[in-house]
Image (cartoon, rainbow, N blue to C red; front, side, top):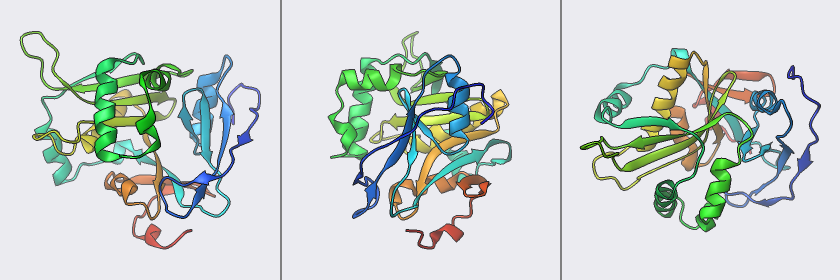
Length: 252
């Protein structure tokens, strides 16, 4: 790391059941994000596969599994395919606004609806409004809540249909957590639209990457990430182009 920060202290969690692969356990290494150079530290850790959760940066450190791989979209080379172009046209009327990281009841209500549809029984379903506020507002780095709304009518803001907690790093946008109306009758594919919007926003800002978190080999819940090519994955030799077919082989 080249950031002018003291070397952080790292800790390791106890093993717990993996939320992605049945029969596996997960373990994480983490450190606190604090001090006057937190943005620089978060940038440096992000480049080596760490993710942020509130004031903590973490990455997998599992004993018997290497399925989780950090991935990022190469912004300048991304060209939407025909399906993605249709999705962009279909949602071109959506009003997008980058807001300060402040939790609202409207966001929390949408999150609850999203979790009950897409992740019933998951750990996040137990979140209350205070937990959600902590997730959004306890950010020691430059963060936004990017809101996606239906068109404004008669000066009244349209209904919230999607949101993403996003960090702006030195080399890209890091999508910390996104959620959306998964039951919307006229806007299928909102999750993919939110990712494409981040790619376009990063391109406009001159940022080379959009960080999508971890791709998990063997987890169908993560397959959507390979649709956004070209994609890079982080391996022992640094960031390399991600070939989905090559990664179909068993790695756990």
